[in-house]
Length: 631
Image 1 (cartoon, rainbow, N blue to C red):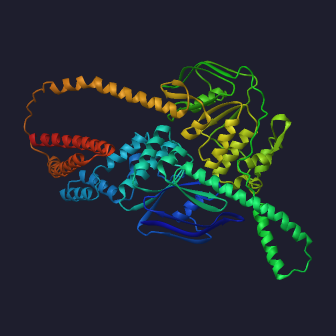
Image 2: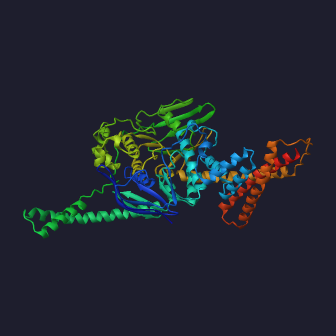
Image 3: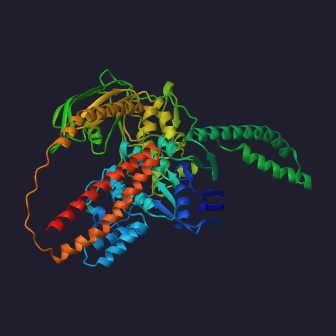
């Protein structure tokens, strides 16, 4: 089934052309990632598909039977609602059925309950509420009574993500799900859960992400937006890189041929008299086309830097027996570490574990409770935080960088200009002379990164540098950091980025414990997975005798309860339970039948979990039924 067809789309802002005459299709089941430099038109294209922007020319046809759902960076919500109330604001038939069911439980009308039970069955909504709570739990949202206005920005985004995932599960219409950087504000465990969820879900997805492991696991089609064009790559991120390299090699070959022809034609142009024949005019037109190709600038990510930073002394940075707590929450407990020259360390752990606090303590921005820190005299920190840039509204990009220095020092007394350094980080000449206020959010983030690096520090500290950076910029940054000769600390949830850059991991494992692991982040995760698997097996072996003992324990005799007459409300509750129990028993029978025929281990696990939930609910209702019968 075709969801979206776009033909010859063109969009400009003033003189800047974002894309020109691009054509594409989205079909049911496609999982597409969009890769582009910030400012290339990714967000604008998404807005056009959402109907929030209009293209200058071309057409977009969206199938009338589909619904387009967007997960955006900006979340709209009513701050007075609880998390659960916010989740239940979804406008879909299964959610409406759950609402009616809850309403019927609190009314005295048996007809309402009968209708509610029928709708729950029609929309298969029995497990929707449990699934919603499970999704929230996976995203570390456990207090459903908390007001939305009391949550942090990251928590609000995770609640909104849970709501969107519930909507795609609950809605039986065809949905095109558009997600813009869904992994921001998620720790590694959440990212891996979401990655697994989306990769297995039967959905149609259009995704913008900087996380390459996530992209590779979830998507099988990549749209590359570059130089006003859109290129479609079927396959993995590695396939996209290979195709891109082949295209650029072909382009460079074309440019070389055009340069040779251009030199010959330039001599002919100079020799020609002013009077032109028709034949010569045709050749002149061809000359200008050749000139355009010959002068194409393909200088991207090619500049290699040999740094001339201030030399690091023998003493770099040493932390001795550092303690740090906030009330009862212990972030650092007797932590000691001595940083070495040229060491590249990745700091990982769950949100709120204390990673950013450690960075602030190292730089003297935050006090610690106990211990000692010794910093070498030659250390010059460069700190890339999540707070963003401070700049004058009308200040141009090039002037902002030149305030530091006109030139960046290289080895052997050489330098490169501020403009060349900007070009290395993908700021073309036009953008360099634009006001900073006109840049996109991602471009401002990139400029902030450049601002830190251009000050030529010898000890870099990066706190979530990959958030809102595009993949081309991340590739340049990775190349830069691999050549960097100073010391480096990175806090990041981007597994691919950390694997490429660091060779040593400090892992926050909770309660102030920090594990020192020599190796890549992926190797650390593999080691942790094996440890948890082994621990789980040991717990199962330990619990078995207890279970057997519990099963054989004598059941105490029931104490006789005097008979009494049911109240009107209790009588209605008994009638409702009488109607509800057969529905739940029917669902249990269906699950048992599915389990008998199922061979997919993951599906078996899901069905078993559902069977356990339904069994518990049925047991509660039967006990309540007995209580009411014996009253």
